Image 1 (cartoon, rainbow, N blue to C red):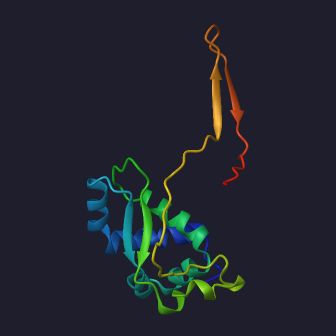
Image 2: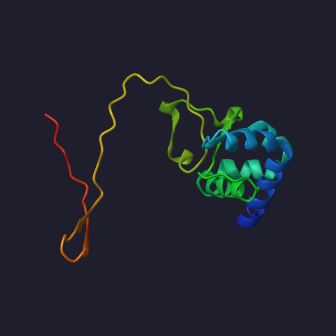
Image 3: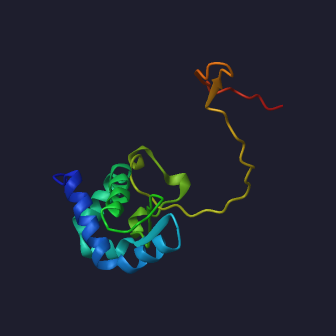
Length: 149
């Protein structure tokens, strides 16, 4: 498992998508959606080594999986993100039981949203343009602390 290279991960997942999810992917692309739901247990049956690698190194693997979608010849305008469902029982964990050993691992957490706040826009950079010469000045904004009272 440790010996899997990035190209192996991408190639194996691309083959999995072509064999098992080609119709679903075509539908996602034709409807202009941005995500493809993949049954993790089906991936585990197809390629257990790849499934284990995804559980152990999800951040690295998910980037590669999303890139593997681009290798399939569909005229998608937006990148398509892979989302998993039907995860193994050992990935299900209560929030209160999350520990340091879970850092960097793929987990499944159930919960209820009790409160949601509105989205607040944040300026990260500003571009000033001179009206006379057209020169532009980019100013990166520091994150500003807001004190709520």
